Image 1 (spheres, each protein chain N blue to C red):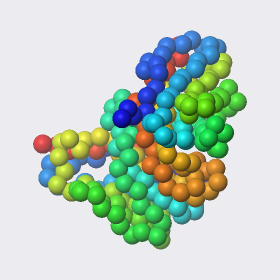
Image 2 (tube, rainbow over the protein chains, first blue to last red):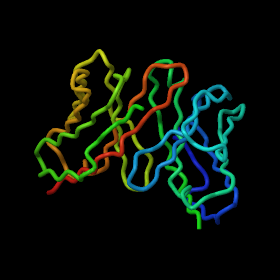
Image 3 (spheres, chains in turn green, cyan):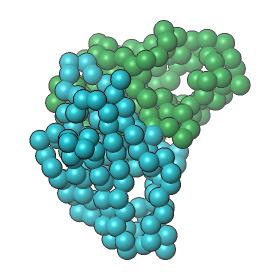
Image 4 (tube, helix red, strand yellow):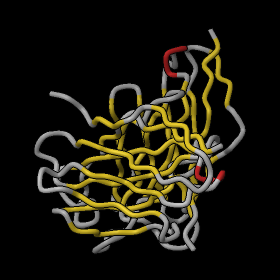
Length: 116
Length: 113
């Protein structure tokens, strides 16, 4: 079985541009979460989507948005990129909604975004 | 607000010894704590979870303890090997309708041959 996949693996953008990152969860998983990981820090929660609805949002500006599709894949969009958005963006999938009861999260390899 | 604190200094341990990593939290006691391993350039990999009503959890050479009085979790790797070298992340969340998982910064562990 394939694990969580993310695309692209690396991306270079300039300030002010827009970016779309993609995530395919493990087959059968209904929940997708997005995290931002800056070098030397732990992952910071951005969004959780469950059954195509936003079920949690971290402390990120409105420039960050996401959605989940009927096949449970997900996109993270970031508008008006800033230098500080440079980070590893991680997607994690789980069988059910993480908040109700424990569900193990499986992380993808991440997308390395560099903003110049 | 709730914080997770892990020792940001790298930990160097001689091969064969037990490595012990610390995770402290402030304020409320989480429903459960999780420990992850992360290798450079890779996503975190889940290792162990311990619930608030559990004192200890084991999996092969790994052991996690949870002390709600001290607001602390300890993560032990016994008979450590160079392949255990990685960054170890502590994470937690409350049982809530739409809560988020909070990660610590992680501790880099080096097992010296």
